[in-house]
Length: 124
Image (cartoon, rainbow, N blue to C red):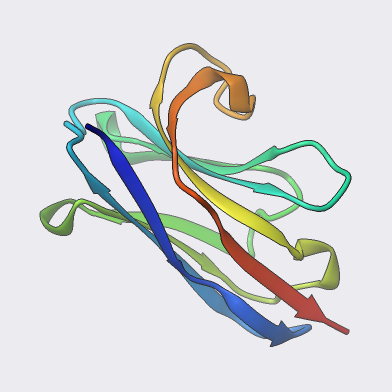
């Protein structure tokens, strides 16, 4: 049984930094892609960043390019999202996703497994 468990997040002032982590179990990484999504109240869940094992390629939404970094630690089967220069509009629940079924990666319906989410709140 695949489990994705997010941790980290929290509250920070604008301009600050936070990191969220996603520990995966029961999951064979292989050449699959994993990703981070976020969902603010009343909004659609949107893709933030993705990383694919084949070549370690990373992809980012335009809104976070240059501020967020997705990475992974294979030995710990853990995915990270380092967030810097945070803005109030980054406030959302952040979700880890695994097992990309089809492209594009930024559509939440294209991932099979999901974590329960970690709240990130940025105050102005």
